[in-house]
Length: 442
Image (cartoon, rainbow, N blue to C red; front, side, top):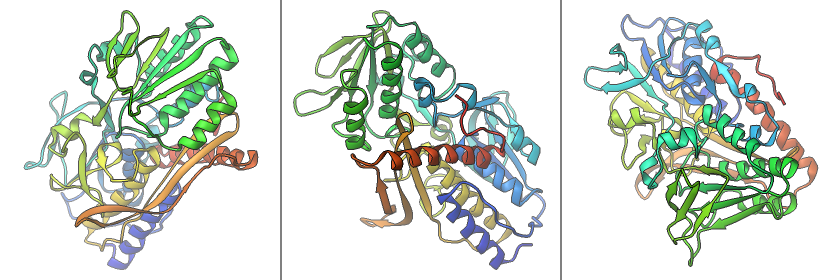
């Protein structure tokens, strides 16, 4: 068995590793009691993959099952770079072979239910997976019916959201390529919360970069449900510097509500709350979102998202279940891949400590979000997060916050860009046990 001192050291290392990409704690292997080492993880992204890798690396005898319906994972993070020509689509795709090589049982199936009393997960084919600890990392679901006329079929054929990377990412790029020079691209942006708060504005830069390079008579019109957005001053500086006359940004204000309430996929038209209608050759509709469906089905959600104990991201509603990544309510900690990876490290340490009877260390989390504006011009935002209380309720308190500002030097922005590429390489190794991912395939 691992003694309490060893587990404390490991747990602290896992928490602190949230500030970086890798985890290199050296500890003894736990001799877990028979039947007490079954962990099921639903969702194989930056959070779920990280938990699986750490558990199987640090405790090879654990029975770790990863349920993920996709055989190849396409990263949403950095997928906007594809639209700007700064990454190939292939560079965003990663297999689960690295996790399988560690002994993780990767099951390419959809989870349909959770029986918290029996402690089992049901798959679409009827298989039941018993667990001692369950980690839900299902990402997001898209709320299509929040917009009249929108649907999964519309997203897959005419008005892609591309907010879950994969076929719709390719579809949106094909539409941009097929559009006549002079055509209008429309993007709709929902209210908070949603996956990757600065993501729509990075995408705007990347689409605008494509238009500027290939279709200079075209423009991008954004209808945003919000009056403000993440990293706004630096983004607006970039819009003016690089894409003046190409990006038309419409933020909700006291007069006009630019929240999209209706779309017509056949006419390629959208309508806002204020009654403004617009027609585009390409229409990128980003709808409102909720936690992934399995987290809601499992009873972990309130108001569409899942409350957690910020000490270890256990569900506030269902025992012996963790909810990490985009699906969780993490207060001011945004929904990002870096965030999910940070959650995953703390959860892996907590599971190992719980199964082996070790002490748990104080959790610390970190987030950084990078956004590419133009060639080698990247901005970022981030902070550390520590569990605490606010108004008598559990809360993740931010500290050491940082944000890119307008007027920064080209060298600072270039370093940000190189840092973001290194992070991408690191998180792929961290979540998929894949050290072969290239920093840049363009």
